[in-house]
Amino acid sequence: MGEFHMKTRIVLLGTLAVCVVIILSYSISVSYSEGAFADWKSLGTPPYEIEEIDAVYFDAASDATIASTTAGSTLFQVGGLPICSNDSCWKQVESILVTNDWSEMTITPLCQSDYRKIASPPSTPVWCVNYSDIGFGTNFVREAHFVMLEDGEVWLWQFIPGQMALLIMITGVVVAGLIGVLMLLAIFWMGFKERRTTPAA
Image 1 (cartoon, rainbow, N blue to C red):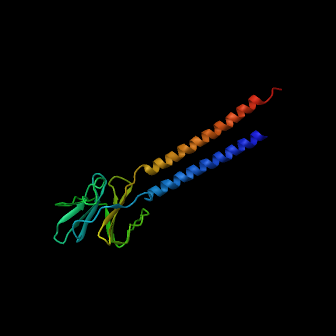
Image 2: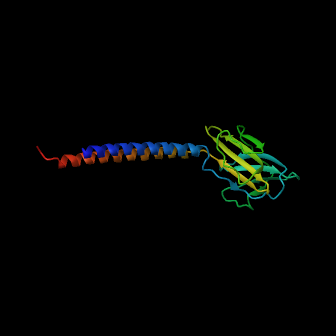
Image 3: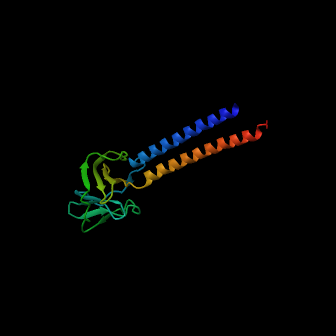
């Protein structure tokens, strides 16, 4: 009778653990897809006063880039996000690369998105450039949001969908499967021990 109760307890706990792992992995996957783990990155203060935002686009390395002009019509843009520091993000350029025709850019007082939950900027922005990019031939939306704060510093929030959400779900299913296998092995082992210890008739 005790063995039966133990098996029942193992089944219940194992099933509960499987359900918790699947629900947790699904929740994390959804949160990732909504941009919950993306954070703001400081681009420092531009070496000029921004007169106009000319374009926002993703470069060949999938780094969000903002191009703007000064009062004197000098064109600057952000470049090399992974390696730039606050005093080297901005560079002068002669022209702007052609942007994707499917892209969309809006300039508003607040950061807004139809697809993601954007983290709040470090402080109240003066303006926010909201940009979404539907990559040609793909079925996902890349996003970039540039804000200028009251102290003149520019920050970037960007999200580029990939395979991570799917990998999170696959990992959760694998872990749940392992828990199920361990549960079955424990039950079989208990049944094997029970048969060995039962006296022969």
